[in-house]
Image 1 (tube, helix red, strand yellow):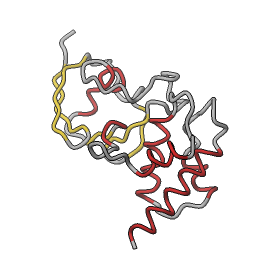
Image 2 (cartoon, one colour; image 1 turned 30 degrees about the vertical axis):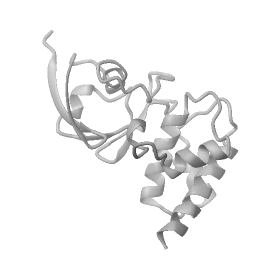
Image 3 (tube, rainbow, N blue to C red; image 1 turned 90 degrees about the vertical axis):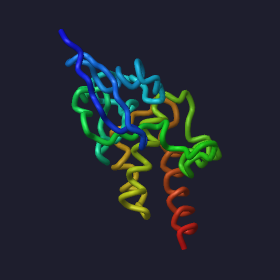
Length: 160
């Protein structure tokens, strides 16, 4: 079977790659593109560890065919920091120990960033609902939710 040529944008950079028609976006990110931040936790879209955004929409990259990325905009965890400067969510996760083994962390951070972009002042219930697609087997979620809400408050204050 012939490989497909895909032109896309990943983290603001024009990107091209070759893929098999049945290859997932997760496999291409972690393989030929070397973007290993997204993790495979389940391979069935149930855990959220591989969460990326596709045209601003949260998706599980294990469920998206790489060929679907043609002419689309992808954001991954690798594009979250600006150079050596961590995104405020990343910094707060470190400060509040809102991570442990790290398998879920990239997906949780991608979902949390998208939440705060759409709703800079979420309630705890809204944050919990928004992050419900991301399973964490280590932290118990409380530190994650606190980190998201604290970051939201700090980002609102900084915007004033």
